[in-house]
Amino acid sequence: MHREKSDILQNLAQAVIDMDMTRARKTAAEAINAHMDPYEAITDGLARGMDKVNELFETEEYFVPEILLCADAMYAGIEVLKPYLPREAAYHKKKVVIGVVKGDTHDIGKNLVKIMLDNAGFEIHDLGRNVPYAKFIDTAGELNADLVCLSTLMTTTMDGMQVVIEDMKKAGILSRVMVGGGPISPGFAKNIGADGYAKNAAEAVKVARGMFQGIQIPLVIKTPELVSIRKNRGGMQ
Amino acid sequence: MNPADEMTPKERMQAILQGKKTDRLLVSPLILNFAARSLNLKVKDFCTNGRNMGDANIACFKKYRHDIVYIFSTTSTLAEAMGTRMYFPEDDAPQVEIPFLQTREDITKLKPVNPEKDGRLPVYLEAIKRCVDAIGNEVFIVPVIGAPFTTSAALRGTETFIKELYTDPELVHAVMKVTTQSVKNLIDAFVKAGGVPVTVEPVATGSMISENHFRAFVLPYLKEVYAHIHSYGLPGVLHICGKTKRVIQCMAESGADILSIDNIDLKEAKDLVGDKVCLMGNVSPADGMLKGNPEIITTMVKDCVTKASDNPKGFVLATGCEVPIKTPHENVIAFLEAGRKFARLPIHFN
Image (cartoon, rainbow over all chains, first blue to last red; front, top):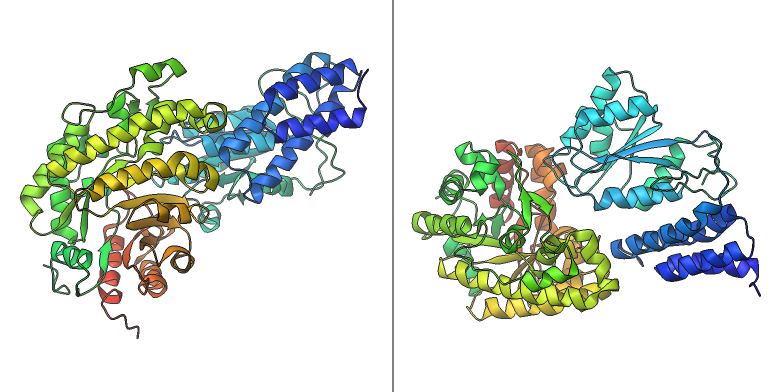
């Protein structure tokens, strides 16, 4: 006998919050057995759990290890559900290019922002760490990216952000730019011409959403690598 | 001697440690890789050669007469000596490239360091000895050691390591035991070379892990480190940059006598732990030293002194973290001049 649907959704969310990959996989399999809509299992189950995780991070109950493990649980559940999703039609979705600027290999902060933006429904193109300036510009141009996120932990590399922003303008690329990382302040972000600054991953979601306010981002599931998911939130926050 | 001073940095520090009267507070911008600039060296040439590292710090001291001369290149130097592979940019601090502990089983290969032989530790030792010989009568030479948690993270890869706080706590403790022994070996070697070692634990910052994890995985090992430093009759100094409000109570329980802090209000820190430990901080390296100007820096120095110079257990004026390599010379001068002006005792403001 299958449990009630709402129980399963609740358990999916809870498995993410509890950092439990095994339970996320098991509960995702239960959702399939119960003939639930896999979209719903992701958006109202796993992603809802990750939203709660985001809140716990903001209130400083969860820290970096917790977020990384919650994300592992979420992606473990998604792996189980993915084969049951119908093939995707191309949706219009907000494309984000993200990376750590050249000279810096510290990427935990960038990875947290990636996880949170992915969960918030953005399509993420992760360039990794120690990324040459031109790579941001080329990728943003090729993809016609909506947003470029630049991260650094070091004072020696923060000026590279300004180079990227200026070169993007010269190349006629209109993507918006959000910056963040240890030494970055709102004042610095403004001075170098960034469109947004976020002090942490939770705030990055708010800032990114704010930039595209009023524009509906439909639910998008991408098969390879990271999966973009979005729960229907009934408008932007 | 700087005309505004009445004591050498060494006399000042000794007096403070003995609880005697001094002409002013210690003024200690965290000049680390920035010292390379005093001999117009690229950071790579500075941090891979003991002669360069020592001579640049000597030249830097002669130029600025700051109260503490640090010997440092990166927080991962100890992990590097234990097997982690580093990437050396031409003109920036080395960074972790390939962590040593690729698999759980690699722990069997992990050994405490031999500071005379392993990695770039001999570079540090040579730099310390050169500084001690040249300027050791005027100023303490203070080599900086990555503390056990930070060293362990650089050995295992930070993301993997901090996840293992939950998934493999046994491994975390096993790695921490070996790195703690390494830290102690390095303290022995640095003291023998004439240095006064201090420790940095930035991976345990409050932006990264919770207080519970700090208590379980960081604190016991820090206690062991400071007990070892105390056995030499030296003070324990703990630097953690980033946000530290959440973990500052734990830091104060570590046995460290001085906490060097970055992103926390000094008044708040004073109220929280000022009755237990001396505080050190915290002019902003980015907005102040690198991007600011002499006027901004003077204001920031004044603000720090106003907030913390009456800390019950003392105060050292410093930057919150490393003085950036590209910091303009006049900004360092502004920091030191403002320090010499405002940090005179008793504190009076016009």
